[in-house]
Image (cartoon, rainbow over the protein chains, first blue to last red):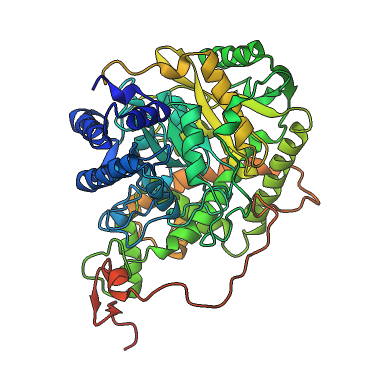
Length: 486
Length: 95
């Protein structure tokens, strides 16, 4: 087989259907690549080799029987935040180092039903809290473009694995930028769907009003194929969107002449690296070359999104993570002297520094006497930010911006300064607060490192978002660049 | 907002976290910095703005009150740090 790892899902699917290779051959090829290269990247926490080969054999039978979907037999990886039956599900934490999930999350079930083959579980910032993948209990993930640099986070393992072609695609989750920012920093495509589009059931909760699952792939076309299988109403998730799923793949054909692209004024100025600004402009120019019209839009409250997020997300996290008590599952301390000692020491030993900081900020913001000043205030600011988007979408069909204010930074560069790290998500967080879909696609590289271009759609307009990203990728080759050493 | 070591100890107790003296010091520094970031919100006029708890206008769905799960007690307890006779074991709570 000649380099099938550089093929997209769409190409691999055609190859499987034509009998150019089998899913077992493909799966073995990717497993071999993981063994060869992942020592340098640390993008996987758990490899599920035996299960993968069983799934690949049944995919081959399904293809032979003519009952395959476009995803059947394609090797992929799940972020270790998704519960997987009988497989360790750690969420990047010591707290769950010993947790073997007794059930599959809905997203895992749906992709398995479509016939995808799971190679393993990818590394991530602990409980999805981080923007560099340095907070993982299982060690940092490295960026395949420069292993001295971070891949972004929190879905850093998935991003690094897809970028290094250790799997054809991966799942991620995005609470404040955790799919889009690592996709940007590693040169891949990452989609955060509208809040509620993919079920959260079995996805370990961080901030329940923000968390959303999405695909991380080489191309927008692949993201459309995966989202088609991942999305849908689920009675097991009380905030799942009860509306039909669009045909994302069929929507990829449309031309974009006359489409109004809104460029966010506030995201193109101060704080933006000059090289990234130039790459963003090149991507905008490519869209106008395809017939799109540019208008300037304003999000006057966007500068408040990081402050509001660091109340809303920690408040929800302090509540969600109260379940880790050392009693029913997860880490338990040695020889607790009483119940309070059991809770306190189990949690202190099980959680890392960033998780503790966020739990404490949340506990403080929700404590008696502070609720109005912090949580209620943040919810009002959240409304202002969502209203900014509602106004902007009256003037345009789609909003664009850089995904991240800078490229991949060096390991350790920001790890001692939580607030500096939080600024990595300055262009992505507002999208989560408003519940909108957003995608990051590669723009021209800057200083030898990948750059992400963010497209933001109105609620449930994933079809338009994916089509515009696809048209951009048909007209450019920025998404086809691969790191030389892998 | 600047948090004292005393504040940090109170918050740690609310969050059921054990912190030692060295951690308390670094936490009071880090948490104060985060709160300073958060307090940039104070500059925004939010008078009369409806709080947004959730991205979608939706009401809580209800379902028919019937059992949907089968009993898999042993499976669900297999991750317990300490269990006996189908019960989770914790330190003595009542003397």
